Amino acid sequence: MKRLCEIFEDTSTYVKDWLQAQPELKEESMTDWFLYNLSKQTPTIRYKQFTRTEEGRKTGADWEWWFVFSEKKSFASRVQAKKLKPDFDNYSGIAYVSGDKLQIERLLDDSSKDGFASFYTFYSTEDSKPAKCKGFNSKTGVFISEANNLRNKFILKGKRRIEPKDIIETSNPISCLFCCPMVFETSDVSEGFKQHIKSYFPTISDNLLNNNKTQDGFRETPNEILSLINEPTIPEWWENEYRFRFERVNAILVVDLRGERIRKY
Image (cartoon, rainbow, N blue to C red; front, side, top):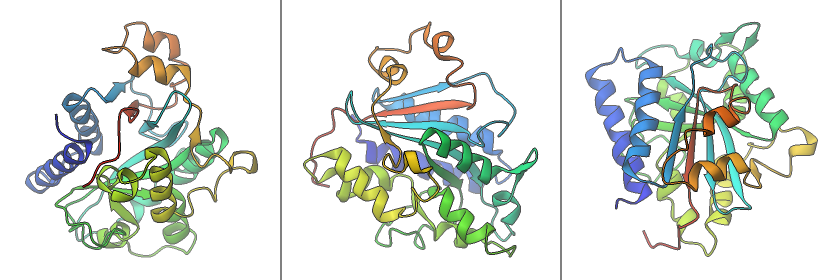
């Protein structure tokens, strides 16, 4: 079975090749394929798409992403996906207005209320070398960036032209979450993961409400997440049982890290 590092690297590379061949691909199509393909390659990743709601209507998020370390500890985040256009001003994508509010503000505010971390995922043909992880050499087409940092850097400082490389400089290849020695060369994967998040996304908790600042996205694993990953397949009753819990997002992706051990990469 492929390691998570390989799965995310290979899938991200495919996205880049796909986007180079078909630059007019829609964000929704790439997101659906990316999440589904990840889940088909390993039983430790579960993907559930819900009945599509109006984009960004409630949370500004495309999907909810959970990392499960144990029955007692998980990391929860909400993610908005964007396609970066080469040789184009990408400001409108970051400053996109959803209803009467900036989408990025909606994502941050609603995530903060629930104690979730907030991320953006970017699909791009840009070279990954300018990414925060300087030594990471990958042909990846999928990057992850902290929403709070994006707002501080590109919204609060006033409108200016945003090139893809400007955004990539705030990001890491998404596969770095699973390939980084900081995560998997520790005695505790959850602590290694926490150190990775704090090192590369240091302002992640700045937007959290005071009562949620101690969480930084970390929390006890809820029953709806455990029931999703403890069965061989997603139970037929699951969506009906928890439909109100997930009515604000289009999909959920759960990465089960309970069986991960120290690895020398």
